[in-house]
Amino acid sequence: MTPEYPERVELARTPTPIQPLNRLSEKLKGPQIYIKRDDLTGSGLSGNKVRKLEFVLSEALDRGADTVITCGGIGSNHARATAVAARQLGLKPVLVLRGKPGRYPDGNLLLDSLLGAELHFISRADYASARQDIMYSLAHRFEKQGRRAYVIPEGASFDTGVWGYVKAFFEILEQSQQGRFNFDAIVTAVGSGGTQAGLLVGKKLSNWSGEIWGINVCDDEAYFQERIESILSDFSRKYRTPISVRRQEIRLIDGYVGRGYALSRPEELSVIQEVARLEGIFLDPTYTGKAMFGLMDQIQKGRFQKGQRILFVHTGGLFGLFPKRAMFFGGPDAPEFPEEGQQDPH
Image (cartoon, rainbow, N blue to C red; front, side, top):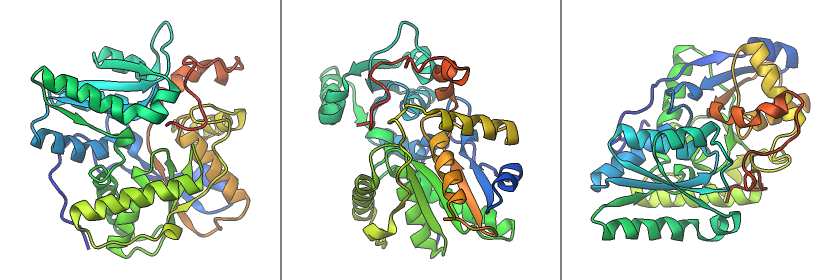
């Protein structure tokens, strides 16, 4: 059953292509791996966040907002995508970022700065305990100035944002039908839960028989099962969608957080280099590099079998490579942003 979608603003370049990773699949001697190129949703809007923002910013505009406030790590893909989309729609972007900026902004923070986003840097402790309060306090301040602000939770991973990957799921389904084959599993990185939540809604609405696997890049399986269950509960309540996802159906492959959120290990960076050299595709160090490392390791351990078709969702993040340049060439791991790279992004 294809759902009736709420209103959205068209921002993303979709449908994004699906292509086989033939050389990587041959090297691993396991399933045939395909990749959904959501890194190609745009240039400044590259990545999975713009799919969510199409629905979220439509709601913001409908409510008369002239300002949008969101949060993330100092190198956040979501914050950058929100700032880009806001400027395209004539909205003022305000970003609450966990961390301390270096002397010169790099990666996503450089783009945030070029866009003229209003930046508020807070500590990891404040981010974990008070980021929502801080954003709503800013919204209240703007309201006193005669503006109207719309607050977007971390990653746009809340009820409205879920629609982005419900729509993406049906896009994948249509593409697989056109290719006359089915995927046995879809694998995605999980950092805030909204992408996997949307894919699970699509699976339920379509009665798709495959599995949706998330590889968490922070926190752990128990945290994300609870988080995604909560997002789906809010989604069902708000949109009265007849779906029920049990906690045990929220499948996560734990154990690949590594040194922590946004911190890289040599083996993860090696996978990024390997995929680039085999397939000409750039993964990112925070999300897709860790997730692909996890997928490749799981294939070698036998979770996915030869003859299966696995679709890996490339959620973008190209700009996250640049602050890691020293690590790729044997330099020390000296993070550009001292507060970035903690065990979780909260």
